[in-house]
Length: 358
Image (tube, rainbow, N blue to C red):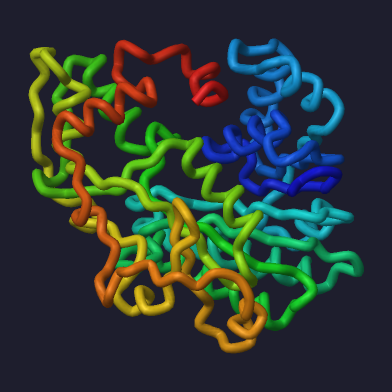
C-alpha cells in the first residue's frame, strides 16, 4: 500500500503521529521512499529524532534503518498555505493529523481552533488543487466530537470533514477519505495521564460526572483504522472503528485500585458531552460494514457514483446512533483493557520511551 510512496504526516509529532510514523517505518504496509513529519514544534521534532537515534527499547533495527534512510522532518504550520505547498511537493499520500483538540481550550479560543482545524484544512485542499502533481490520497483524522457537535472542537472537526469531502468532487484526481474515532488511551492531553498525575500526587482524582462515558481505543487501534481507510475506503468515505465504551468513573476507580486516594465529582466542563457518538441516527442509513470497521458513505452524489463497486453490507444500526453508552465495559472489563495496554500506574515507563512503545 505504501511501498515506494512519498508520505506526508501533518501533526506528525503528536501522540498519534508518533505511533503512525513508527509503524510506517516498521514497513507494515510496505517501505515508503520518503516519510515526511510536518509540525510546527521544533522541540518535539528534536525529541522524536533523538528517540530514534538513541535506539529506544521499542525501536528495532528495521525501524532504525528506515529512520536513517527515509525520515525527513519539516517545520511548518497548516495555517500557512506556503508551508503546505512546499511540503506537498511530489507527495503521494497525506495523513492530516494536525489539530487543536483540547475541548476546553477550543471553547476559550475558538478563533485558534478554527484557524488550525478549518483554515488549515482549506489550505491543504488548496495546495493539493493547485499542485501539478497532486497526491493520490489525502486522509483526514477526525473525532467522535464531530458527530452532533456541541463544542467548538467538534464543530470545527465536523466542518473539516465536510471540507475534505467536498474537495473530492472539485479535485477528482485525488481520493479524499477520513477516519473518525473516540478517545485514544493515554494520548497527550487525555484523561488517563491526568489520572496518573493526580494519583501520584496523592489525589484527589477528579471526574466530571458519575455516568459520563467515552469510547476507548489504543493508539495502535487508531493507526489500524488509518491503515484500513488508506487501503479500502472509497472516495468520500469515513472509517469508524468498532470499539467499546466505558464509564470514566470506572476508569478512575480501576487506576486508583487499593490506594487511599479520594475521588471527587467536579461537574461537567465547558463543551463536554455526557456520551460521545461515532455515528448519528441520520448517518446510520448510509453506514456500511467494512470488517472490523464501519464506513460512512458520502452524502454527495458525485462521490457515491465513484463508490459504485465494492461491498455495501449494511452496518445494522437500523436508525440508531452508535454511542459510547451502547456497549459499556463492566468494571472488570475496564481493568482488563487497562492491563492489556499497560496503562496501570505501576506499568508506566519514562515518558520519552512510553509513546514510542505504545
